[in-house]
Amino acid sequence: MKLGFESLEDLSAGAVFLATGGGGDPYTSYLATLQVLKRTGPVELIPVEDLDDDAFVPAIGGVGAPSVSLEMLPSVDDPIKALQAFEEHVGRTVDAVVPFEIGGGNSMVPLIAAAERGIPVVNGDGMGRALPEAQMMTYPIAGVAPTPAVALDYAGNRVTFSTDSTAVFERHVRSVAAAMGGMITTVEHPMTGRQLKSCIVPDTISFSIEIGRILREFRGNALRTFHPLRDAFAQSLYGDIFHLYTGKVVDHSSTVIGGYDIGEAVLEPFDNDTAPLKINIKNEYLVARIGEKVVASVPDLITVLDYETSTPINAERLRYGQRVTVLGIGCPAFYRRDDAMAVVAPRCFGFDFDFVSIEDLTGHHQALPGTG
Image 1 (tube, rainbow, N blue to C red):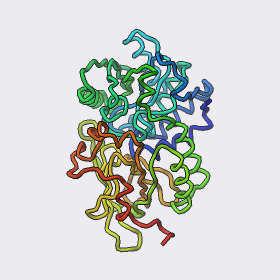
Image 2: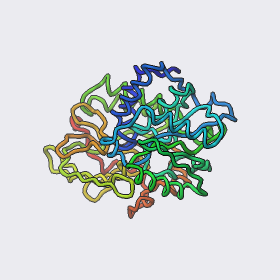
Image 3: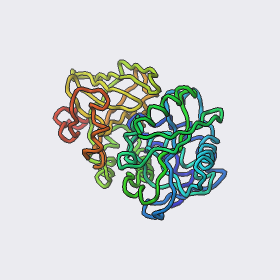
Image 4: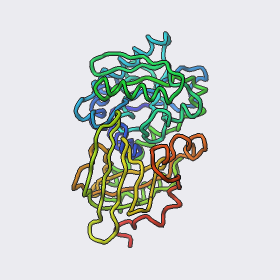
């Protein structure tokens, strides 16, 4: 499949939808990718099954606090420079690249590197959403080592990594990101084609384009977009989609702590006495509660949409006074596995409760406006 600049707007919107608030600013990365693909032509998007078992494939993307990307704008040169630095470091040519998350901005970074290098992008990623820490990717959960890895900052400075575990790599890469301006480009988790086939969340790039198409063609509030989205998710590797809440942002706080955007948002309904909804944020939307009742939690997906247009809103762009609709989606089955739950369950983020799947929490969800 050829992925040209004509698909980027839909890809950007769909990736932000799946990214649960994280993955970096979509607009600046969209503009950078648009510029590159207009110059180079389309990039080849291949299913993982088309990879040779001995192909050499690293993951590439941005690491840091997403809010920084609104101030320190990405360069079109960073992805290819990072990839070249990685090849020099390992002494081997890369055959393809893959996203480490289907984040808003991070869905675009591999396209830039691949287009400049003339290699394909694998259709899939290592999360099926965005998550804040490296050990939460499917790649390390399946046993892929994170290093050798390379990081590049906005000034072209390079740092290489060789660690004995992904948890150690996460601590090191996060501290390096903070020291190098708050946002870096990394090439990491080098894999063979055989390894990638065993752990990728497949087809998420093409599915993001499909979600973006639906949001564009059915542009409007949740009552207009919900049912086409539900039909699309029913055919996907994700679970069901649910309406959690519609209301106005009445409080929002965020600060950069340890290289992450940490904060929370509080919503109140427009015109009824439903209890407020609170969303906890660590780069991504992690937990949603109505009053004291959890209505969705990581690793299931929580997505915030503009109420009038259903445009997905990244966490760093959430503001007081916005009118929004909040949706929840069941995560891919990989993240319901015990080995995945060991690193992505709510307690891994410091919450004092066990994971309950979103389909078992529907009794606490708010009714979709216009259906009651």
